[in-house]
Length: 416
Image (cartoon, rainbow, N blue to C red; front, side, top):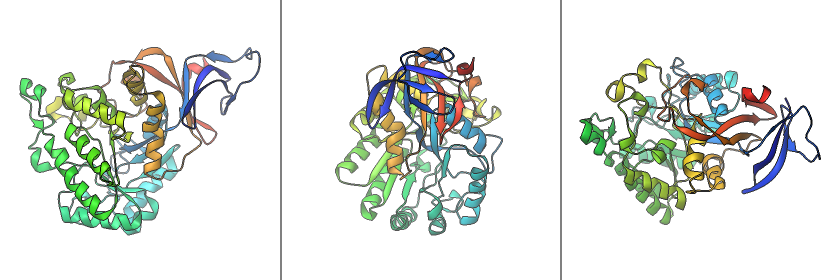
């Protein structure tokens, strides 16, 4: 396979430059020849970017391999242009001690073909009652999280932050006060009112964030807020940064593109936290623009078809996102002029690595941004197919993703 990416937009050290690039099936190099090789496929309208890094994915193994495996998760990530991911600990067994963590690391060593970094849990079994064996796992993880559950006990969170501070690790918090959820499953807003559904209020997110900001300020821990969705959360994080708190946060593509009036009564729109109001969405956009929001993660959370086919009421929480993230964000944020392509690279590749001290890798990805297509979950390599972006017309089709001199994803059309 020999491909010329003609006049490609290439990201180099924070800048975008134009080059003709030659791909020989394994490596990418500047093309300086006067004539393109006769046997080379010539493709225009491409961008060549560093491999993305997602700090919030669920690969479901060990324990739930019928939803996703390390291998299928890596395939999905590579298809989306990612060369590094961080996997959340809601597994079986929960990685709350050295022995349990090793079971996950074994699967990663056996099956991963991109860089996979596991979280360890903050509390044992993610039950919020007793702190995990943080010291015993700190040398093998980058951060601690109880994602999927909030740590309700303030004293537990304070102690965890103090220990993480000593270890130099990040506390990544799923901020949710379950006592304020009351069994809801979508935003407690206009859609819920019009359709008689139970909602999840914004207070369940921003009140725990405000509590944790106080604790992070007290302890000096590196504190990271997962999947921010509410305007009050953005305001609280912005204020904390101005006060010098060591805080970062992420949001996800679906919170930046949809509001609650876009929801349909289908499992592919059920995630936690929920899609909120247009006012919340615009606050997130402003947070992306002014730097309050540091990165975009997908919260890629695959489930089986049966688990996602019961509408908003009966389906499990979680949607897939690795294979559509760049296209959705490029189409809705870059092509519309809301942010630059360089800013999107910072959000998807640069900032996540800097915050979690992930070494930059040799990975890169190439996207065709000239041709519009429709997102079709049948094309996904993930075992999960529930995406709120099903049928959306976008620009940004992944052509190749490479890491350490090997292609970990190649679009079949390159060899046609």
